[in-house]
Structures are given as C-alpha cells and as structure tokens.
Image 1: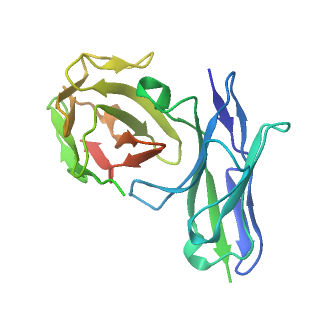
Image 2 (image 1 turned 90 degrees about the vertical axis):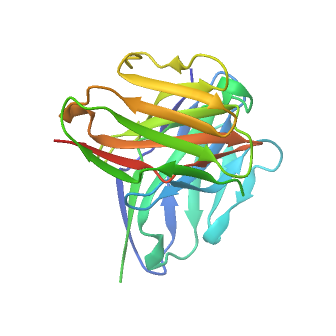
Image 3 (image 1 turned 180 degrees about the vertical axis):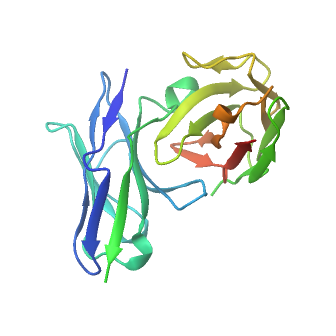
Length: 116
Length: 113
C-alpha cells in the first residue's frame, strides 16, 4: 500500500518569499505523484503531477516540484509567494491510472498562510 | 479540462433522513468515480469506488448499507447517506480519473442536525 507524509500542517511565509511544502511518499511500485490546492468549501484543483519522464515538473501559478526517487520526496516550491496562494495544499500518490489503481492516497495537508 | 459537476454544494438535513449527492461528468464518460470524505481540517479519505454497471467497492470501515453508491450510467454516480446522523456531517467530494489526472467535483457540505 502507498502512503504520503506531509511535514508541517501549517506553513507561514511572507509575500514574495520562497514557498516550500514538503511531501514524502511510500510506494512499492513506481508512483504517480500529485499536488492539489483546495480553497475553503471547494473541490480540489490540480497544481502539477509526475507520472514518468522528467523529474522536475512545472505546474500552474508558478509552482513546481521535483521527484527524487532516492529521497522518496516530491516537495512543492514557488519562488515568490502571492497572497492568493493562501490555501490548503495536498500531496497525493497513486500506483496507476486504470481502474482502482488510480485511486489517490492523500497526505494530511499543509495550510499555507501568506503574510504582508 | 474535464468537468465533474457535483450537487448539491451544501445541504442541511434532519437526523434520520436520507440525503442524495450527485456527481455528473459533463463532457466525458466516467467509468470509475471515487468518493471521498473530508472532516474539518483533515485530509480526504477514500470511502468507495463506483464502477458503471457493477457494485461499488467500499474501503475498510465504511458501511455499505449506510453509504449507498449507484453508478447507473457513464455520466452519473450518486452517493446516498441513509439515516443520517450528526457524525455523518462532513464534506463529501467525488472524483473521476481522466487519462493521468483526477477531476474533482465542487464538493458537498453535509450538515446533519
């Protein structure tokens, strides 16, 4: 079975500062990795994903993440935080993309606060 | 991208009544739909997987008789919370996989009073 650990349930950064949200995964097979953002009382929006190929993936809103197999990590970064980035961020893993293999296992989430 | 429409977005019901939540795939056919539950300030937990034309698969600890899932067509999956109790109050979200991405509904905030 796969699992995801997000270090830090709450991260606070100043506007314009680097954003770093940590995610480590455990999987017995090559994983598919995702980062989602959730605004209050809304569904989830995909920021970026790693399936195969290039380990540095770029997503929407200036976010990127690097898949590091040796460290079993998939940390999310953004060079300069905006106030609009304040939200809940979830890292997720799946082991495939057909049928039940595509179900996502989520981390516990990290709430990003951006201050002036 | 693909659109999953979930209704209602919020519902308040009395204890003991049943509530139906619908998820529709608007521009694609969803053979599989995942149903998640999210308690306040917690992560999403998979409740069940619905497959068009067959019985849903429930995760361990989820009562199948309480959370009825129907996936009668390729564009509609429903979750019915039967005999709802206050502890069922939660945020319920559906999701359908398309290629290498999951598309989520807007979520349903259920409050049982």
